[in-house]
Each structure stands twice: as structure tokens, then as C-alpha cells.
Length: 294
Image (cartoon, rainbow, N blue to C red; front, side, top):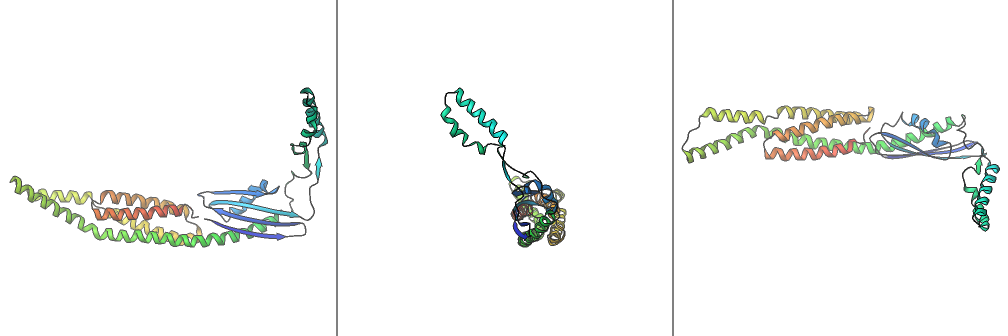
């Protein structure tokens, strides 16, 4: 689910702002951005975030300002001298000493020339409690935004499930007529065959043919199981706001798809086949939505 949340806190030593943005993802992925040393603390951030967020890509942006700078710029004169010597030697060997001033002007951007004392140090231990407080406050705001989207998603899931249940109800109404219609069609064919060829058909043969068709197209078990799955789906959507149900919803939808496919292949009726298509369309919308449900 998508959402964002931000929190700030300032102390005499550190002004800190943390912004969280989440986008849809089947798994939990956390990326931390900001000035050093915060990107190095991704594991610590994940430990805190994982307590609240189960799925999604969470982007963390940290902005920190210290009242007393902890770093001091310094030139590495030894490395600088080595670079100058090598550049001068190359220019002399190639007969272009006039290029030395131009090449030397870019030396400060080379690796290892300008360093910051303490730049590689981690976050001071006294600062982490503040970082964790701000992170938790941002998580509260993030979850509030995600819950609003989650409620809208739950409403849509219930609507699609209700549409499938309504179509399944119409299938139940059509099932008894499938065998009756088949019996009428086969009787008409028999009458035509008898009239054209002058042959006779035993009633037992007709009854046996109709019984075989009825057994082959019996979808009562599929309808019963699909109804049970739809009820379980609705229960999980309602409970999902409390304990999370994303994975279980995926399993239930998988079973619903299996029953709908079997129903379509066995039904043997055009009207039922059309309803199966509608149920498949609704189930596909559900599949897309539950990829983002925790």
C-alpha cells in the first residue's frame, strides 16, 4: 500500500527530520537515503520499520543538521604531492609542460585529496534514541495514510467478492435446468432420427444418456466449495485490518480460481459459461488488489 509520513525533532545538538514513503511491493524492501552515516544504518532502520510494516517498498529520507559540526575538512598533502609529481612527469615526457597548471587545477576532485575527519565514524550512541523516536513518529503517520488506502481497498475487495457471490447465486438457479434442457434436446434429436430412419430407441437408452450427462456436468461440489471460499474471503478482509491477512487472501483466491475454472469446464450451459466469465473478471481484479494487502 502507498502512503507517506514525516516527523521532526530538534535538540541542542541535532535537528532531525525523517520522511517515509511507501509504494506497493509483494515483499518488504527498505532503502535509506541521507547524509552519512544514516545510509549505513539500514539494518537498524529495517529492524524498527519491520515491527509496523510487513509488505511494500519503504523509502527513508533522513535530514540531519548538527549545531556543532563534527567534521573538519583536511587536505591529504602526501597524496596531493604524489599526484602532482606524476602529472608533471607525464607532461615532461610528452613535451607539454604548459598543460601542468590546467591539469593541477582539478586535483582537489580526485579521490583521497580532500577528506573529512570523522566522516567514516558511525552515529554517536547518544543520537540513536532520538533517531528511533523520530522514526516511530513518522511510522505512525505513514500507517495512518496506509490505513486510509487500505479501507478503500477493503471496500473494493468486498464489492468484487459480492459480485462473484451474486453470479454464483444465479449459477445455482440455472443448474437444475441444465439437465432438463439437455433431456429436451436429446429427445428432439431422437424424434428426428426416428422419423428420418424409421428406427426405434429404447427409453432405457435415453435415461442412461441423460444420467451420464447429468453426472458429467454436476457442479454442486464446486459451487459449495466456491461459496465457502467466498465466505472465508469476506471474513479475512474484515479481520485483515487487525492482524494482517495478505498471504492468506492469496491462498483463498487461488482456491477460488481453481473452483471457477472447474465450474466453467463442467457446466455445459451457455448462460453458466457467461457467468463464469464474469466471475473470472472479478477474481482477476481481486488478484491485482491483494498483491498490496498486508
